[in-house]
Length: 373
Image 1: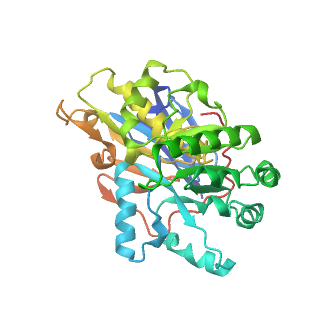
Image 2: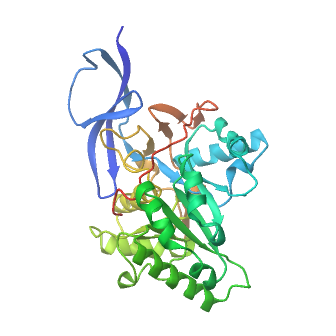
Image 3: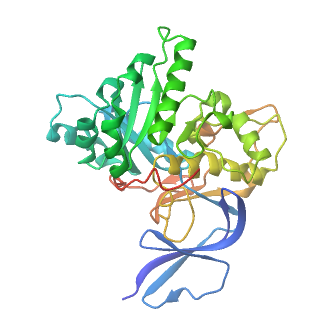
């Protein structure tokens, strides 16, 4: 009996740098071929069902970075509603931050993570810790569980000076970990302190060659102030429009910025782009770059042979045609996709959910050092 595959015909494949007409061949949840051809629907032991994607853009699935920890949602229906909201906006995977508490044993840690067993989306775990907890034994402990990304909360410049970077270096090198800096956003931390924290962090991570994501865009546009490989900037909502315009003006340049789709706002009153060029920039910023920043690229964030078949179907006639010229576009609320596929299975098709609870997988072996953004 022939194995079942899928060929998606007639779509326009959107990448970070362009759009091309091509057919996508999917088998066992992976993209196995991208080509505009007339190959038969049965090759060897595999029978390929056809999906008509005429008049569709095909985008790689977006990677969500929620601002609140999702594993704490205890109500099942609320949890599923949150997941469906991600799917409707085109997200096919997400990263959740597990908050470190010293009293947790291994079984207790695993119990805290069981909520995502109900997830229809693929997910990856990060660990949230304070600067005082950023120690070799803590990194090693979580490394044993396949966790390599740490969100470090800092309240004062003095906290950075207490970090024993030399003891962390070997673990960072062997485990290829990545640190996300979060400066406490409250009235007690003054602007001068924030600037000092950021600069000390930039200097320390550059000296010790530790890759880091910084949730503070103050120097993101000043490319001489940071290392083009080690320092990645997660952009907040208020600068995403400026960032998109900067990327448009330097279209083929590498620039280490990323923003999840739910943070992206575009001022539609400024018609400085072609619609298709803007679509490429959106894929670059919120799909490809985010996947690279969290270590999931090219498994996620790309439509290439070998990548997961995470595909967002967007009708060409719907792209930027139903919005007033005075609009600031909020992409988390637009729900543009007609259909969404993850690992070759439908999550959402023709505006109807078709996913099953537990379809999502926990993703291991992230590689945040593998690619320049």
